[in-house]
Image (cartoon, rainbow, N blue to C red):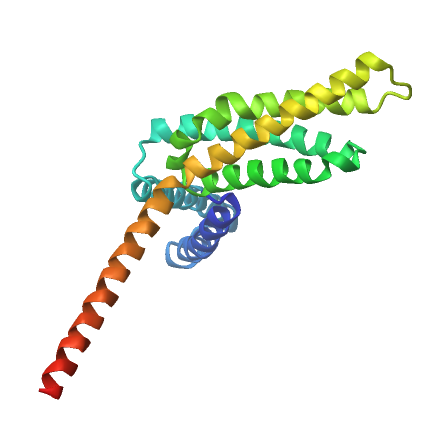
Length: 218
């Protein structure tokens, strides 16, 4: 759920409600300025929390999740956000042109999976391999590569380690691509189904036109 949008909606509902409560308390019930302000503040807090509860309930219903499931997913997404932040830092501080494209691919895929899962939390269950295995591996390897590549003097052992790390990162990039494909696999299947339906409809329409033209010729 988008936090900024949620805060914006809650504020739009809360501020007018708190204002109406203050005017009602001050003018209609003849309360003092301070008491009216306290009542308005309390009412605003209640309205804000109620709005939050309603929005959360609708969000969970839309995505077919329980509160327990959402808390679990959100916890893992927050942890992943920190890992991706570490990954970004490592990727941008590596000064190695041959791995630039690979680093950009890693960044693009990890951000895409995180973004989709945040927008549609139920996708998390299709991205568990990414969150519980591949993300940790790519963060650790990238940080290791950054550390070794920044050494002022390199020996044969460091060069070998850098080479092996690059090879492993290549394999991990492929694994990340497979993770992304698996996350969107239902969408691909749905699209293929829609394409098949459309093709069938077009064929049926063409067959009907052919039959109509044959009848006219007769």
